[in-house]
Amino acid sequence: MADYYVNQEKIPGAAQQTGDVTQYVKDIVNFGFAVIGILAMFMLMIGAYQYLMAAGNIAKVDHAKTTISSALLGLIIGICSWVLLRTINPDLVNPSLQVIQGIGGTSGGGGTALTSDMSKVKCDTVRNYNGFMNKNWSDLRSETNINSAEDLRNALQGLRANGNGLTKYSDTIYQTCKDNNVPLWYAIATMSYESNMFNDKGCAAMNNPGCVHDPKTDKPRNYATPEEGIKDNVAVMKSNMEKYSTPLETWNAWFWPDRNAENCGKASEYLKTFPWAAKATGLSGV
Image (tube, rainbow, N blue to C red; front, side, top):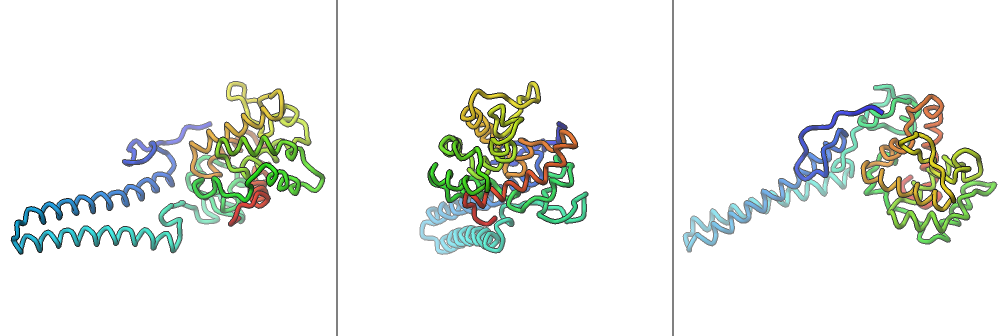
């Protein structure tokens, strides 16, 4: 896995330095709005001080009022601009840089790709994913209509016409995802494809529903029970979600499509399971 450039200058207030252009722009935008608030508060303090020190001098009082009014006006304009941009399009205040279809190797339809993702994913098949994969985790992390293990079991029963092996583990899946704040749709999509709902050999035979690899051996881990495998898989998902801001980036870290030609060829099929699982668990806007 290649190393990627990381900006040497961390934007004040950002969680960490990043090589993700999109995240860097987000940090700049957030910093800009923070500066507006800080400057407004600073000018309000100056205006208040001027007013207190005016000692009845009408000219100084008027000057202090002007300073306070200007600070409040600037703050209101800043807030209104943020609200207006978010109303027009949430992505304007939560930027998601995209490449133009047909440029940079993008082929076909089915979605757009982040420029930051283009440097990580070189398979054309992976670039054709559904748009919600680029949404920030803050918008997708907990959105679901599944409120109990029974709800999840009912949803799982409808995923495959011939039944599936995940249904009987709905209690474990539901509780583990809740404990780790991992979206049920994300866990189900990963497990259902990698292990084919516990109905095939390979990772399923290892009780490893997400086919998590051991970094030391680069081979799938082997678990004593499916429950143990589910818990560790979800724990790894949580760890990845804390490092990356979108489902696509998180998925890239989980299922690296450039390992070999076989995985690269399966990548587009794998991505299709995400909207499939999202609809099954009640995610809106998919």
